Length: 307
Image 1: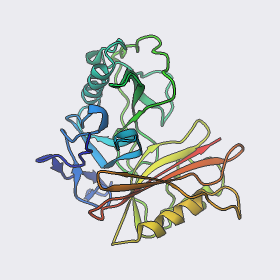
Image 2 (image 1 turned 45 degrees about the horizontal axis):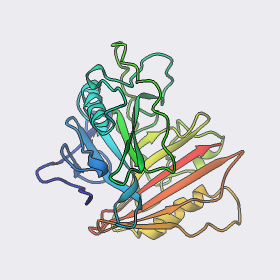
Image 3 (image 1 turned 90 degrees about the vertical axis):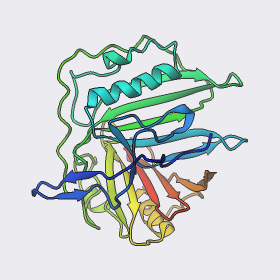
Image 4 (image 1 turned 180 degrees about the vertical axis):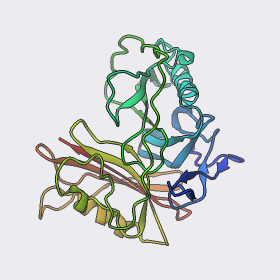
C-alpha cells in the first residue's frame, strides 16, 4: 500500500489561539492533511481531525509494505464524534473485538490525571498470509502542549505473536469529556520542549528546542513518572541531520558513550532514521525518528520515557 500523505482536496490550514487575542499558525507551516488522507492498513484521517506531519513508517517487509507505523492527528471537531469515527475504523479492522463505535467505546472520564488517554482502543487481525497484526488508537491532551486540542496517536504493528483480545471495551459512561489542556505559547529555540511532564530538576535546561526546528505538538507525557512525546518540524532550510544529532545528544543518558547507527527505512520516497540513544533503568530511555521527505518538509519525533 502506498502511503498517501496529502489527499487531493484535503489540504487545510490549522490555527491556534495564542492567548493574546491573535491567531497564529499551529507549528511552522500552513498545510496539514485533512479528512480522507490515507494511512497504512486501510485507515484514513476521519472527519473532524487532521494529520500533523506525515504518517511515520519505521519498518517495512520484504515487499516494502509497512510493518510498523504511527501517525499524530489533531482533533478539530467534537472529540466524541471524532473518536467514534476512529473506533468505527478499529471495529472494521478487528470485527471480533466487540467494539461499539457509536457508544464511544474505550473512553472513560473517571480516575484520570492530566495527560492520561481519555480514550484508547486496540484491535487485532491477520493479514493475507495469516500473520497477526494490531492497531492502537489513543486520544489524550497533554499538559504543556501548544495546540490546546485533543491529539490522537494511531499506530500499527505486526508483532511476533498475537495478543489476547480480552473483554470488549466498556462503552463511555456519557459523562462530559473534560476540556483539553490549555495551549501554551509555542516555545522559542532554547526553551523547554515539555516543561509540564519531565521527571527531574534540571530537565527544562537539557531538553530544549534545537535551532532549526519548531515544536508542532506534544502528544504524550512519556510514562507514569515522566517524559514526553513531541512532534517537531525543521525550519528555514535547516540541515535535518544536524538537527537530529542535537536531539540525539540530548537523549543520550550515558556521557561519552557512542550512539549506535540508526535503523534506516525507505518508504514512498521518505527516509526514516530511528535512533535509540543509550539509556535505561534509573533514568530515561529515548527514541528519535528523523523523517527526511522528498519535498524538504522534514520532521522529527522525540519520545523520552522515564524508567
